[in-house]
Amino acid sequence: MPSSTVWWDILLRSRRAHVDLFGLVDSKFEKYAAQQTAEMQRAVVHVNNNLTVVNAWEPRGDSEIQEAIDEKLKWSFFDKASDIEVRVDNGVALLQGTVDTWRQWQHVMNIPVKAGGRRPHNQLKIRLQPQRGRNPLYVPMDFGGAPTGE
Image (cartoon, one colour):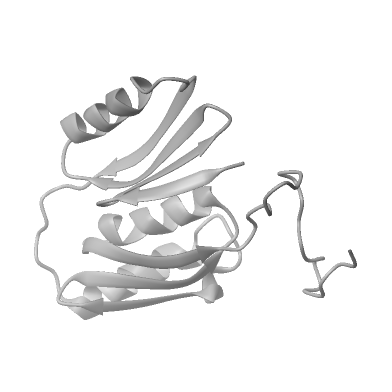
């Protein structure tokens, strides 16, 4: 059964001795240190380090950052970009909405950083998380949005 923990700006997800690290760090050293710390834990077999290193912030206008984020979301690899709302205040992006997977969660987290924003506040929810005790490929809704019968 998967478990998740948020520690500062790092989200750690573990499943069957495999650990995924998501989030933002300030340096390559912190990225490396987080991976080493996870690898040193007993019973950890593999660590996927998906952490993003944030560069020094150069001030940009909120509207300029907002336009850059909207453009990057428009061309992102998933079609539900309309499910994501972004507000920018003083260079800080607030992300709200829903994405399908952890990979999309991390991708959307990286967009404001690449668009010139400061550390984003990620309030995104992940839609397709398997329920406990279920097959990880379980999808609770059909493509029309109607609940499937159980």
